[in-house]
Amino acid sequence: MRPALLGLLAALAASGPAAAQDRCADFAWPLTRERTLLSEAPAAENGATLPFGEARRIAAVPLAQAGLHAPPERGGPDIRAAHVQVDGAPARIQVTLSDDAWVDVVQGGRHLRSLGSTGHRGCPGLRKSVRFDTGGAPFAVQVSGPDLREMAIAVTAAQ
Image (tube, rainbow, N blue to C red; front, side, top):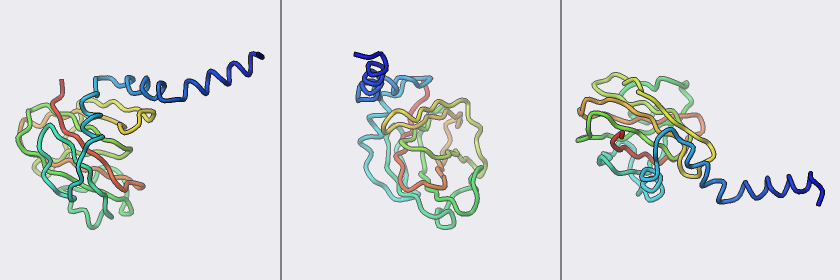
């Protein structure tokens, strides 16, 4: 076979399910548990309580209807958004998202600064994970973006 054809065949083989699985290992910290939670997330209403250590699938609505605790840090008035409430979490958490969106953690009306993040566009059902220090107090997770329609959100302990 010609080298160019062999290269094309190798590229096609690398783009199959095994390659997607490999890309899911490209995160800065392990997210196997979170990927499972996101894939099994039941639907919940915007603003619902998300039990710590679980995931929920939330439909986004126009920003004006989202009822966020604070304006998103990014985006304009035409974006879509959703949020969940979290109680009873440890001080250091990670918010993991199934799809591309901006994530804010709001506590006491103010945005918390992230401690770090990891993301990859090549892992089906798992887009990114962001860590925050909440001090163990209740908080809201807000997601937003111009193309956001639906999103699974998991909140777990940062290891």
